[in-house]
Length: 177
Ligand code: AMP
Image (cartoon, rainbow, N blue to C red):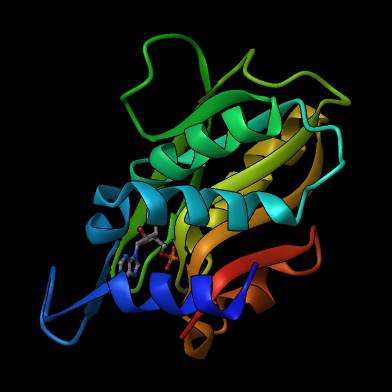
């Protein structure tokens, strides 16, 4: 991906201070999504890490991971699997709980979403502490599928989320802050 493309993408991400709570600088990706050329560049950039590889499924995390994940799946010729917040999926699920700064969260995936040996890419919009992606990786591992890598649009490197994930699969991010 060219430095120009990365600059254009970086310039389009909007910083929103104190959302959803004081002290958080929220990375708003909606200006990227709204621009056809930037959206294409973002998805192409995320797909580059998996060029020439056979991918069976892209797993996307609720909710902005659905946007990048589904487009990435189409781009890689793979199917799409949603990981959702607890209680949202209609059929039988496996779940994983993970700790937040205060309290905990739980995500779920359908029991038949992945088969052993399937080649999987995990996708989300943003890597912060890595708690969410780490939980999704555990769900994928439980199925016996093979995790080829994790693709983020944005990585907040100062939160060191990568350290929590890097052992299990290569971690790729298009924009690093
Ligand atoms: P974490 O589990 O800490 O890695 O948080 C990752 C999830 O929280 C991602 O799905 C992001 O959508 C969201 N998130 C966390 N921090 C931010 C931020 N500063 N801006 C936008 N989204 C964020």
